[in-house]
Image (cartoon, rainbow, N blue to C red; front, side, top):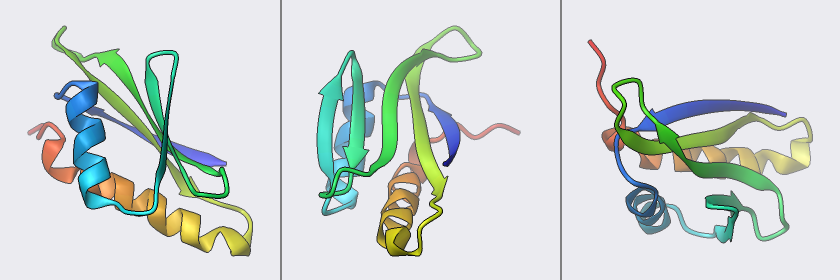
Length: 95
């Protein structure tokens, strides 16, 4: 499985709420200080976890799925893309 990561300059609770308000049909699970987003069938789409940003500030890391091998998982790929799109305006703009 292929994943990408994005570091966000917001706390985990804000990132979670932002995604949950914009992407429907997700199962949200908390484990060990992280938040996982899954399909109703259990396929992991993305994970939010705390991170220290390059400037030393606390933020949130989003790891989201970019490729799914099975053609039957096309729905999951679309949902993972929706999760990524939901946080676009939270991402720090780097010149």
